[in-house]
Length: 328
Image (cartoon, rainbow, N blue to C red; front, side, top):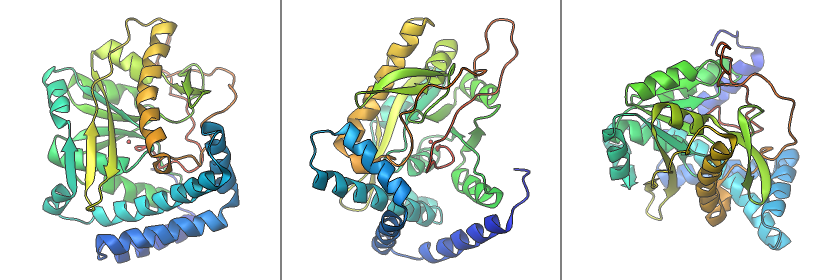
């Protein structure tokens, strides 16, 4: 990144470095307890995001009691506190300890997809421990490219990039990243993309997500059509013994063609898989961002029409985003 760090950026970086220096020596149980405390502190102090999380959950689960909704709101904040602490802790682990922490479920599907020779699009959302999944995949299966949004703080951006690339992965930033994504797929590599954030027209297509229309990226559908890449949903969930179960779901059948109806149908099917996981464990998803929004005026999209040069992708990350992975 080229932006010069401000005093606020330096203060944030100093705080994160201090936390990293502390948490890297903690046993897992203590790190998770620290994450609980951090998450609950933000639950108490961050009223706007607490209100947004509560409103999103009430709309998604209208039959749940107020008490149950509030319990889930607290669970969301606790989870993201744990996620931060665990990523910082795991980033300092040697490879053998990281391998021991991860249980791969269905990884043979990913290997079969790679054997087809046209690349793999790993789709997921801000659910569970998605950043950990990318690290483990790069170490235990094969390095991949992770599509992400650059952080505003250049110092934290560089720190996060070092973490994300520590197991051999590469990071592709959204703006201007189309050519790099296509090149990775043409070289039969994996590319991880998050599909659970609001995307402006024309790159977004409206699909049903928890009973409400949500503008969702059409990039996965178009990339699958134009490259023949296999599309595979992936998710990471904590296990009772402290390990993490990394699930490789069955591939999603590609769109029949490039018609708007086929693109929407495919995007809906990908979203349905994500919704299934979120419905089962709602406390693991990023409810504290504006996923459902009113449509904006159309802008130039990621995929050009005939006779138009490639345009930069236009998207929004929403409040509380992870800068990609992760944004996968």
